[in-house]
Length: 287
Image 1 (cartoon, rainbow, N blue to C red):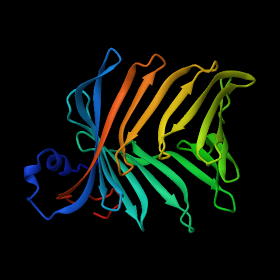
Image 2 (spheres, rainbow, N blue to C red; image 1 turned 180 degrees about the horizontal axis):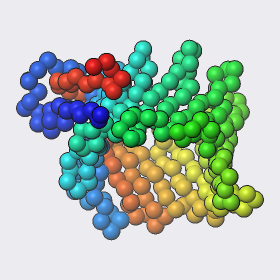
Image 3 (cartoon, rainbow, N blue to C red; image 1 turned 30 degrees about the vertical axis):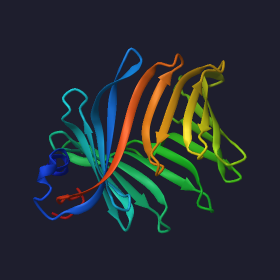
Image 4 (tube, rainbow, N blue to C red; image 1 turned 180 degrees about the vertical axis):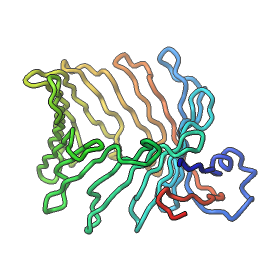
């Protein structure tokens, strides 16, 4: 049976006069505002798209997404931890009904070795997908295997390193198909060790279906300033831009097309609050 759960943080964050209702907890709250774009320009019209709640040591515990049109809650996620490690991500719809769960599993040496996706299937929460992580003896991730309800993987991604840096990522579809694609990403770094370029190629057998490069540009503080996505001829088709607060946290993120027109503009604000967090129980908690 689907569990219903009330999340008082939505009321508290939108109506600050309710703060004194109950015992208060110190939290960090990050709000993401999305600005309306008209004719390639950012307007001053904006709405809150997403809000995240963190503990004071930075652990994400809640995330709410709002509907673009109604501005009401669209969905939300609770994050539960065990022994300091993320245990489950539990997804609810706007009606407070549990929809799916991502369950994180770890090896005895605390490496994450598997995630399992659970969904309601014929009235029961059952496995609908899983991802297995493979490491070498040094503890470096060398492969990722994705599967559905069955254990046989339908997609495998392998990772190759040089001097400690990821230099090649290769993703293969394992199901027999005439259109079976292979995605390859190659990474290049500067002398300072920062990522300079990603070259992405998609192949179908011997034919190249898609290729692009992504250049990374940094500001004087070493923070990522711009990612330039280029087509095979080297023309910029998309730029992803960042600017930051004085403490180094992200302030704005915006995207522009090759003609310089704004496609997306988000702003972020992190604040500290004292609120009543209420009590949430994981699906796996004993009733």
